[in-house]
Length: 168
Image (cartoon, rainbow, N blue to C red; front, side, top):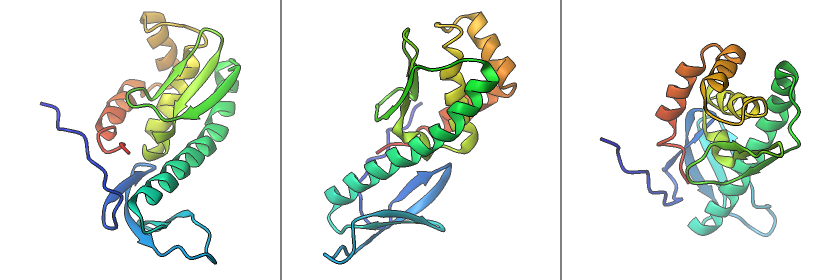
């Protein structure tokens, strides 16, 4: 039986995953002299905002920027290894998909990727890049994924385990 998804309140004390580890949300006062920002500090996610809606906006922006950083690191590395070249890579939020690849070669990555462990995020990137070789989920596609990343099926299960906590 599937558990219901986590409902976020964006209040101090709540936990948010970051690169596979939980961070405790700490809202701190935002004054005109201190710019609104988000910082991962040890086991805490420091957000300069006291209003939950403002904290939510800042956290969404922060996760997007962190996922873009992950993409800038992993996509060129794996594109070279796989001998593929995506036309473009876009990061945005989606409810159900971790990524997708269009027939024109555009890769989309979910901004929540920064919530996952490095291994699970890498699996998503490799999975989507492999679609540039096989635009389906047939046997040839999965063979390509496993050739590129031998523990792919284990990492796929890890992704499924982590996705319940990776909600905003």
